[in-house]
Image (cartoon, rainbow, N blue to C red; front, top):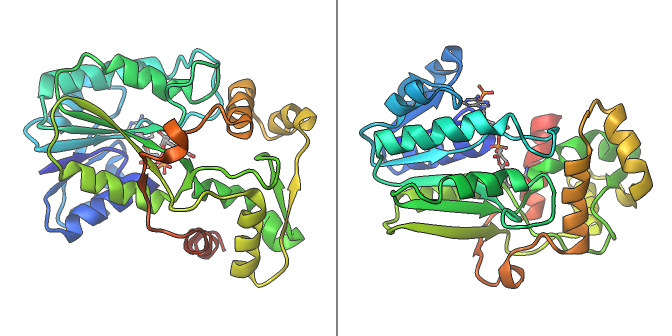
Length: 288
Ligand SMILES: NC(=O)c1ccc[n+]([C@@H]2O[C@H](COP(=O)([O-])OP(=O)(O)OC[C@H]3O[C@@H](n4cnc5c(N)ncnc54)[C@H](OP(=O)(O)O)[C@@H]3O)[C@@H](O)[C@H]2O)c1
């Protein structure tokens, strides 16, 4: 039996379906009871637990061969990530008390970066779990290709991809969430001792120009990438409703300047199977 948190999300859903396809039993950990029945219909045991509640989470993670932990995404946080602290505390306590056989935690490229930026949040997670005496894999995933869901409307309607990643020929390590879920499933079925870090990116790195071309092929129209000037980012992000845009801007700077990257530019990273074209086509089908 494997307990899967965030099973209603992109990565967790793909992970659970992959395990189900290989005949594994799943305990679906949902925070909202109404999201349980679709997983029960697939044969999963369903439990309700919130990542901020150590008590319910301990019961959810007890007695299983392996667990998958995903910390909900944080986009708009103060640089100290105050909302993360109760989640880290609850997960730590639940893992120590429930003692599952092994743990895969979704982390990120750049988790080890010392420069302030949004990805420090998952660095805090890794540090906080460093003394938990269980087999733990921190799966450091590259930039999700599916972050481009925000670009579907402008690509379709204007033929423009407004790119914060720049320059436009800069290769960025990316990965599809489908590959992240499938890799997390594969990791849960492996045996290892102690703690390890697994890096994951697609077979090919992606430039904004290539991303625009993939949108063009999927939409059947010309799509070109266009730089969003750095000096406009803060105003745009605040107009979009962000209250703390700095950590996000620092993160994008890190990708653009190359100080957010895998060790040896991904030489040791596992490689995904999903191509850029497949991921973008799937995204457009989903977003209309
Ligand atoms: N975006 C990137 O480029 C990138 C790259 C590397 C790593 N990551 C990491 O990937 C993760 C996001 O993965 P994703 O895209 O699969 O997420 P997602 O699709 O946005 O799903 C988030 C999941 O978290 C659940 N959740 C939210 N708050 C919760 C709570 N308090 N207690 C329990 N569950 C809760 C949600 O449940 P509901 O359905 O109930 O809302 C949902 O299942 C983040 O940790 C992010 O740092 C992202």
